[in-house]
Length: 116
Image (tube, rainbow, N blue to C red; front, side):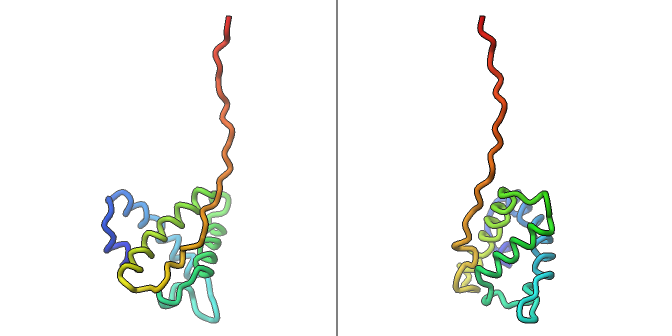
């Protein structure tokens, strides 16, 4: 619902929609106090649940999971929750306080001109 109501360019919306099946699969695999994360009321979702969700997505993706992937999922989910916050469907954005991860930058080989 949050994504459907969000006004944004179609490419960004498509990017977020492509991530949602991974989010759903991870939420369906996390069980807390006998309740699946995917069945919890949106108002009861907290930061700890989102950390578990992001970690589960990372475990599902395996070696393909990078700091950049983590940050993209975090940002996209945060966008949805900001909209839900504006609609007063939630009291607190559960992604607030989850910091972006720092990626490891690879050194690039720089070619230099040979001087005569």
